[in-house]
Length: 486
Image 1 (tube, rainbow, N blue to C red):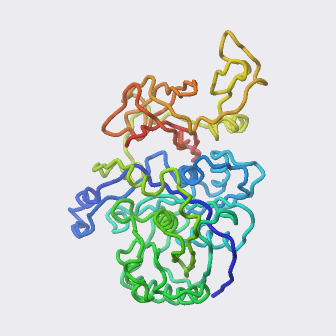
Image 2: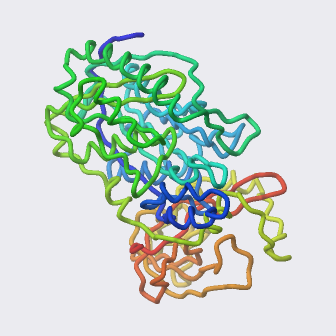
Image 3: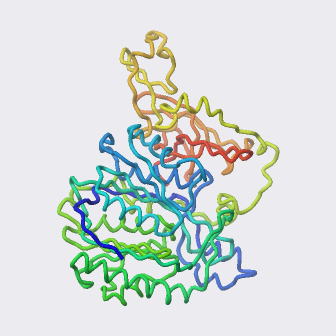
């Protein structure tokens, strides 16, 4: 075990949970012919990624929630934690940095390989105390159909800004322990996790490893168990946090909301998602204990400062959880997770190879959705061209200034619902989006709920997978529009 103290802390937070939720009863009903016992777990709903969401897109949305309108120039590094990166050899953190339009001279890093990757990354950055860091954990664990994990899993992301100014939660202690306790694993070429017996995981893993590390962390922080107001331990096994809290002498009332009934377990991102949710209601002076479990344990002890009352995320985890579209079509979730190979017809065979040279040349526009604003006539255009599109202006591009469209208010100008073109989530909603600042773009609209679309429907922009080159395994990212109301 290790222990030192630092003055660095959390300066902001945010979260993201996919809008799509699956009724657990629908999952259990689909498997009732061979696994009737799943009905006992069929309460509430779990989040699941749409076909165009992954750990990168969720990370961008969580970071936007944490950063909101704050200046981004001061961020010196970005760390992304996930066990489900979209690439084995292409850095997702750099894609996230591009979408957020961070400085090009920041350091980027990815960590993974364990369910405690998110907590470990947070602890490492707090101990390093090196400038302002954007730390993001994003995950969408995948389970084999008819397993208990399929019912309990979810998806989500959490983001934190770290630094030494306007700290809202400071690190007051910590402890770590390494232990190759294999409660589950996923082979390098496997899609799903393989789990061992649940009772053994609880009794030999959580019940012994966490309390020992907790004792060292609380001693390092010079606080006692009854002084802990918020205890965060994420697990896909129900009631694990309450069991461990009782063993450690922490009041059961201090156990944080697991978000199980609305989100499900979001893998390595889940402890930090719970932390972002907890910070929404923490009061100055309160002690927060965060546990990361997986091949050992990390325990982080934080104390909320007076500044916590002055920070608010854009909508927070609570807002993301409330922004839900509930589904009962189980095969939809299975298809989005590549768990079933459907016949999409010949239109689905279309090749979408990405021209990497053009993607690189236009990166400044595509990644951060950057339009050009003519300083002569005020016209806003995307993509930027060599001359102003206003026929009465025609000013050269040197007269343009950069402006991002991703946070600009917009609404539906025209739309169509296309059932003939191939789309992984039919129908394909596409139409012109009218931005309040004057830009008008032909865009794809996603996550359209039962209320549908209409001219004038308010929209917001989301970072998503534009399409997937299945032959070469390359997802291309871009911005899409979605109705503000779920």
